[in-house]
Length: 238
Image (cartoon, rainbow, N blue to C red):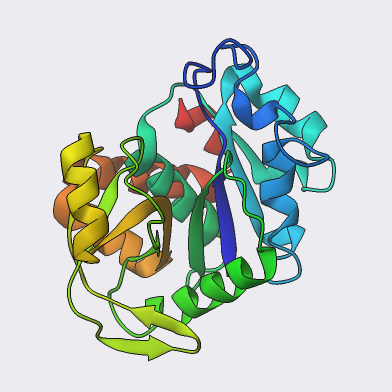
């Protein structure tokens, strides 16, 4: 399994500590290290550093390199402009395919705090197994503990089966951040999970889904793949 860490950001959501030149993933908020470094380190030993890829903005590229000396420099990739999660998945899929066409990738935000890292790695491992069972895009949901209006939610079907110690559901839909009334309803009905924003899928599935749902982006992926084969990846990415 490969990790693709999404370490972009404009520094607006944790202002005034977080600024455009130093967004929250580069801050030490909880624990003894920055959120970005914690994200990379909690993957060990499931995903080693050679298989960890970091996507960041051009303006934060040098800081990411300095922050993650344990990650190979060629695994830190600068995006010329932030284009949100789908573009990160596309770029990450190309980067992983360059290394392993049959690989599985975990797409992970760089600004999470996760206390129980062992359970997290077990969940990632289970998600990777499910991703290989078919054309599955697996996302990790969190059981709500209170009616939270600051998170998105995943509406789930009834329990389908278990993978190890984890329950596996089919996602019905994604819900945007609700108001207080709907958040209380989501907590009561036990049909909704907090959306962690983490996704696990095979490279082959990523290509198929983007070709089907975002064909223009898919065509650009093929150009990047060709550029990588010619040693012109950094030139063409912009």
